[in-house]
Image (cartoon, rainbow, N blue to C red; front, side, top):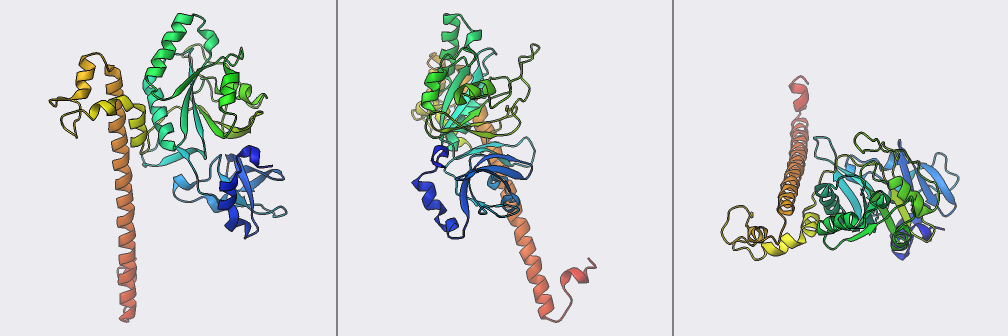
Length: 363
């Protein structure tokens, strides 16, 4: 019963300790308001997540996780733990607390949906692809609403621009309304777990319905004023596909901040990193250093200036978030050291027969 959702020998081996405790396996198909829907061998059940709500946001249970939950008959039913993730798609939150958010877990393929009806935002695409590569999954670009660009020459030009910004990534052109390209895309996602990402109005819900063959997701019109859509999808949902595999549909992404995605950035800009290997200095910033192979490629027209600018921007952003994260971790360690030191001093005072330090200071 769980095989269509990705259960295999690897997960079975990981679950052995939990089976010994009488727990049952299941895959999280939806999380919302402290509870989640989990598909098990006996069907989909509702379970409480109170035992899997850690302080670390990276460890919060997420759609796509494999869970160990109470057996049938338990009331209330709790998720007791979840198995170590194979992959996880992360982004930084919009807050100033230097925290990450897990959008999907145990994903094999990241589908980045981009509407051909809108002006291409190649820098945003590169950002999403960097996070996709960093997740450990394989990215794939899906250009949606192809029926709104009927001119073959215009469409070919747009596809070429996207392909140049996504080296090593498959690009699929689809029209879910007309059924164009959905068969080929369906064959790609037929095995494993895929997650569908993109901004509101990119046609994700329409595409999800086309791939699943059912009307799982509601579809709303895009505003004529700015071409943006409203958030049709409000939670991340794991949907079974008719030919095999599962698809996680997600709400539209407004902000997409990097989270420790240095390797992912390098993968997206592989041609720049390959050129950088020929720079005179190994730490070349590609600004004004002599013997810079990257700037030479720009001057010769072999590398688009926009690509270099985008590469620099993402590297700077990633360096900032890593620095913030390290600072936060150092701050937490200092707090822990102070706490332990205070406890040690209080214990010494008690041992000597005096009052604890906190009492002596009138706290």
